[in-house]
Amino acid sequence: MKPNELAKFIDHTALTAEKTEKDIVQLCQEALAHHFCSVCINSGYIPLAKQQLAGSDVKICTVVGFPLGANLSAVKAFEAEQAISAGAEEIDMVINVGWIKSGKWDAVQADIQAVLAACKSKTLKVILETCLLTKDEIVKACEICRDLNVGFVKTSTGFNKGGATVEDIALMRQTVGEKLGVKASGGVRDTETAMAMIKAGATRIGASAGIAIISGLQDNQGGY
Image (cartoon, rainbow, N blue to C red; front, side, top):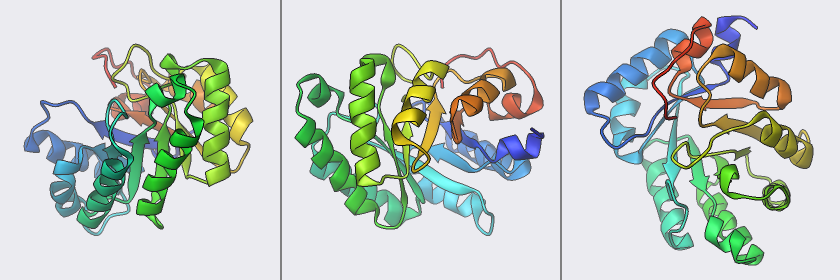
């Protein structure tokens, strides 16, 4: 796969708390230069990113209920509405892991449904935080997302004890079939890992190491 083809898989990401306006401007300029699919940022920076990316095909992606997923569903839905109103084109929401662990699957479904309704025509990605789930829980969560017809299921926030694994990507792809996108995020820091995720079924890569990934380099900074 050529670098420009691989770039279209990447959500170029900057989500840590200390990111400055200068950092976001740089992120956007890198996304423009390398033709990444999107920038993934916290919602407070959407207006700045919108200004930087005006007239380009680089999308603005933001996160909702991030990173714990334990917000009230109405709060998540409102957050999504406000982000879209500000210019977000894709929403990455965190599933309520505690409800999954409590066996409250109806509540989990309603939570996703509330955000999906708020997204309207915009793309919704549901972050499962796979490192905290059993294989059966991953399958059940993916089945709910498939039945609701969200845009993507996504492995991780990148802010917990583990990130994407090839095994989990393959399981997610097997469960959702070809109907949904699958996003690998957390710990994808080089070309080899990114290609392994894509081979396993990922159609999007969330990474702060996007330039290293398309350049065939290793990014040793850690994190997302």
